Amino acid sequence: MTTQNDSSRVAYEHPWNGAPDGVAANFALADLINNLPRRLTVDGQVHAETLLAASGAIAGFAAQRALLSGMAEQDITPANGFHTVRTTNGGLFLYGEPLDRTLVPLSAVDVHKLWPLAGSGAIEAGLALHDLPPLAPMFEHVAKTLGSEREGMTSLPDCEFQAPTWQLLRAVWPLAQMCFNSQLSGQALDPPVIVSQRWRPVIAALAAGKTIQNTALAVPPKKALTIVMESAIYACKLAPAVVEAPAPANA
Image 1 (cartoon, rainbow, N blue to C red):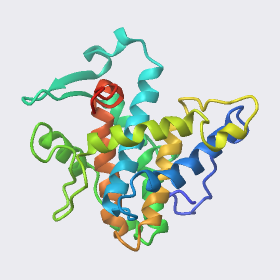
Image 2: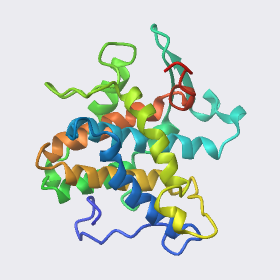
Image 3: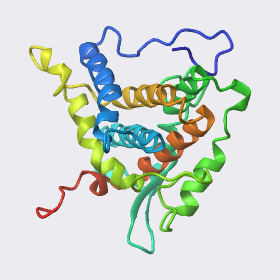
């Protein structure tokens, strides 16, 4: 992989190389890429747009969880840039520039965020650098559709997922946690190694970029990148209880 915003096309290096949990992070990345399509297989087939949405949602939610894990609850306040929003239909969301910054780089050397990594995946799949979609309309779409029938869906016309994004995330987030917690291939490590929160958003972003490449025959990379980013932006705002609350006993 190469960084998408560098004209010299410098080869991308995993930021966890040499870290104590670096091998576990490599296992987690491979497990997420390989197992997510299996989790979403229905009647032997995978709906490519739904897979992309789920991949983006994991990346967005992982970014939120990593950010908040390093903060005390009393610090998640308007004074620190966070705002809680409740929609008319009862949805609860967390807004704030700190959350947006988990997905979008602050500078050209900030290459471990979702936008450059997913964009790199789209470019590797054939998208021209000058044809990258603009980000601002994606954030605007997510904001204006909260609480509506289009909440969690993409802005792209004639593009639907097999379930709303929050439902997709609830279905696949346990898999992502298994990957991060070395409960799949990572079981080979002795003693077990849990991937630190620091690397989890990067792992999910790299997996999303790879998913864009793997679905390129079914979904054009520009469309795929938009699905991934809009799903991530939405998932990054979801209240953790929406995703992590236990399913009802009679579900």
